[in-house]
Amino acid sequence: MEFLIISGLSGAGKSMMIKTVEDLGYYAVDNMPVTLIPAFAELYVKSAAQDRGAYERVALVIDIRTGQTFDALFASLSLIRAMNCDYRILFVECKPDIIIRRYKETRRRHPLQKDGEPLAEAIEREAALLAPVRENADKIIDTSQLSSGTLKTHLEGILTGAGRRPMVVTVMSFGFKYGLPLESDLVFDVRFLPNPFHIAELRALSGLDEPVADFISRWPQTQEFLTRLKDMTGFLVPQYAEEGKSGLVIAIGCTGGRHRSVMTAKALYDDLRERGHVAVLTHRDITRDPARTAEG
Image 1 (cartoon, one colour):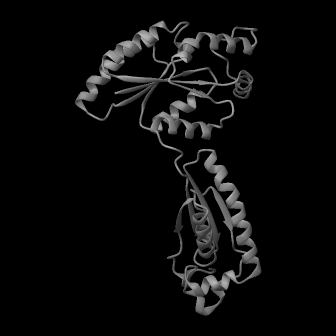
Image 2 (cartoon, helix red, strand yellow):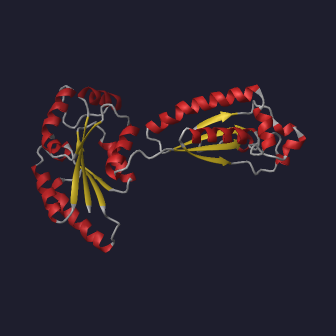
Image 3 (cartoon, helix red, strand yellow):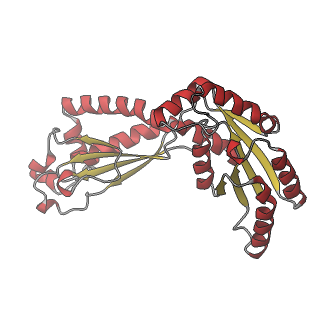
């Protein structure tokens, strides 16, 4: 069984870390009294023996709320190691001025701040009290320049031994007359493009058919729009990935979701794949009866 001890300065990012480790399959406990750790470990060892694989990884957040000294913490960690439980300590810290800014934004009170005391003094006192934990940490993470998404990705890499998981971009065509896709992150409206629905021999086809794609793409406004769309998504997609999103849904709509949106979605999907992104193409409304669709 593996115990992950998360500690560090208040306001440095422990809350984000605990959410991330839960997503990675850890059973997480925040602010457990350190004297209870051996009993907790013993209970989990017994549970794991009965249900092997169910209780293999536990994360405990131990910080200044636990007490003024951490001698008891290291004594408890020695006891759980004697139970053949491995542990490692992750310590998260941040520059004082950034912590101060975060506290001002959230309007929360630092756990050590006394009435009338400058916040900087409370942060300095907390850092001194946590110094023994920091000195024994297996990994120190400075979040001063990390966004929440980047911190999540960085932590995943530390815990899984893997690099950044690629964000999956789903490109979806749809028809506005059937409603907006609720899962969409970005929506582009292509109802301004020339409409194959009004060409009798193209009406029953879809944007995946070459005659329809040729008809739509031959117009100057289509070519300029595709160029601008690819440039925009070429900039946006890496930004979303950098923020730690695991998935991004780009929805492209025309009236019926059969012609213009399908052709445009396919062109964008091909461009994203060429740029090296993990992409999925889906057409929500392409199988709707074209005879009942007022516009394509």
